[in-house]
Length: 128
Image 1 (tube, rainbow, N blue to C red):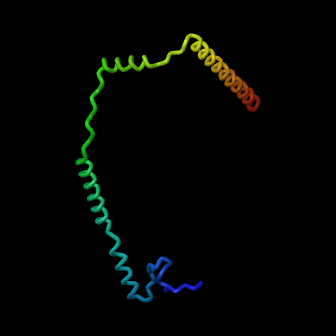
Image 2: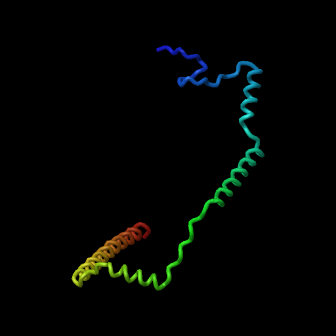
Image 3: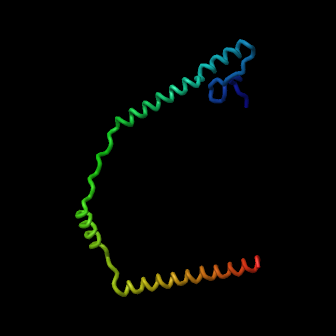
């Protein structure tokens, strides 16, 4: 496949930047590049202007109205209303759940105790 585009164009058809051939072209290229760059003071001034704009924009935005605090009496009534919605376990369910938790905790205690015992004896065997 042969390309019919010139060497200065890339595949999109936009002209690519060509290296300057002599000193005059080099100076012209430097001038165009230096126009794009800003001095440190100009960059600081632009940054300060952007901060000032952000502050004025933030201060002009309306804030949401503050919600009123709940009184202790209203809070208590809401708590009681929520507790009435709870489905409480029966005595047998409570006994079953409690025994399952106790057995599980005892099993974990046994596992941790065995690991501790094994590591203690291993450390004593190594370090005497």
